[in-house]
Image 1 (spheres, one colour):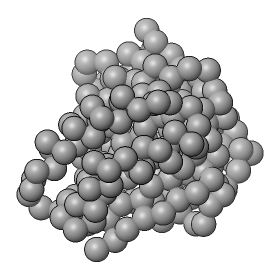
Image 2 (cartoon, rainbow over the protein chains, first blue to last red; image 1 turned 30 degrees about the vertical axis):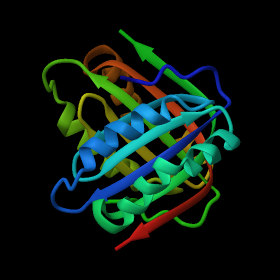
Image 3 (cartoon, helix red, strand yellow; image 1 turned 180 degrees about the vertical axis):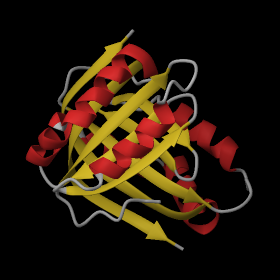
Image 4 (spheres, rainbow over the protein chains, first blue to last red; image 1 turned 45 degrees about the vertical axis):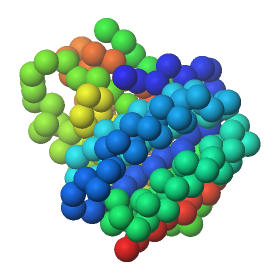
Length: 105
Length: 105
């Protein structure tokens, strides 16, 4: 689903990743992190897709909310497991969304 | 491939879409638009994945470069065909990338 974000400005975290082979508990963790992140103050939505690379974009009301989510204990554990087990590589980009526009049939 | 973008700041265009049924020339156009966009001044890279939704993030050196790409004639034709044929819905978000960090095994 396209995230029903409010009028800009708001923030986006673009997380692009390349997985290692095998699941190793990744799918369960990914579902749990989406569920947990969605309960955070300032969370505005998330969009994800994976083919050769995975792209997850989460939307937030402020840099403070992004920082608070990064610091959540269960998320810290997932980030560490990401580096040791799940990801061959990733990049996180913190963005200020200046403008948006869309279309719906 | 994770786009080898330079040190921030730079810009990102997050294009999230839901397709209609059938190809209708979409795959050919998508390949052509990536090839053409990549030749534009200020283009820094692109990342794409599609499952239920498609996410394409293109990276640019400036708002001027983003505007120039949006105005290219062949891209305008593709945008119009997107609204009439290929997409049930889409959202475009113009972002200023403030910070990034990554990891590689």
